[in-house]
Image 1 (tube, rainbow, N blue to C red):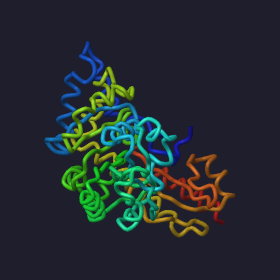
Image 2 (spheres, rainbow, N blue to C red; image 1 turned 180 degrees about the vertical axis):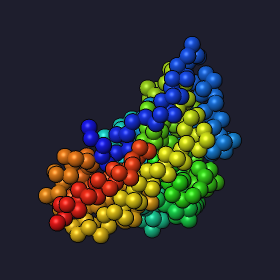
Image 3 (cartoon, one colour; image 1 turned 120 degrees about the vertical axis):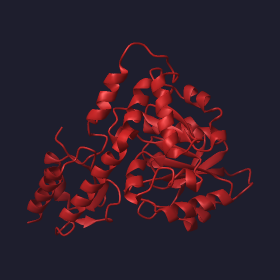
Image 4 (cartoon, helix red, strand yellow; image 1 turned 90 degrees about the vertical axis):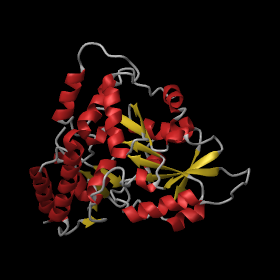
Length: 341
């Protein structure tokens, strides 16, 4: 497959992360998270999210979302989320089928939900015929590459708190948001009152593995059973844990997220004035959403793979990653310019 802009999932494993797997692949180690690598990684998470945080490793992002939300809902309850949220559109109904709760979607603008839109959905409280909202799930960054500001997050979370809702962050790319906002993980989660975070690894240079982080320690009490029952308990936990330890070491996470953000902004600058290209918003994470003529899609994808996000408008999603280089951006922009002539 040619280097392209399809997804940060398409990139390989960061060399330092790959080395960490080799270093952990020695002798024998206890199973199911009782090894020294898992303990070390847990300390790393605590240093970034707070001493009360409890971390549990799972295999993939859908599992992180499903298990996190399953742990804090009951079958008659619902989760409020954006209409374009990953849990709503791209997890094949797993949250509802496996989690047992209902998703209640909220209209969004550029991927973001507002208090006004939430109020329209927060209805029929105490009505036994209607699923009762119990959780607000916020995707940060959103599925459309936008990033909630600190004030936007604070407003949404305060609204949820006043209504006694738990707050979940789908943070598959949370590192990109932290770098974009120039804030620590703690400042954009724990300090704002977030209860649980699905924290991404695979999109950020890891081979595999995600983390479920409970910031509300009381909610983590029975999660080990939820994870096991959901077939997400890694027996060789050290091979997920060692990657996260290296990811946090010497701020590698900042380097990875920083490169992808810089390349996305570089792409925006390179194509914003090309006739025929309509860009949704200036990128604040590692995604550029742009509408192009249908006739351009095939020749461009033959050289640089990417996804058509909206098949009706031919809005495309162009993702950058830890290994995207300036030459990739220049070559892609030149190919678009050629088609515009």
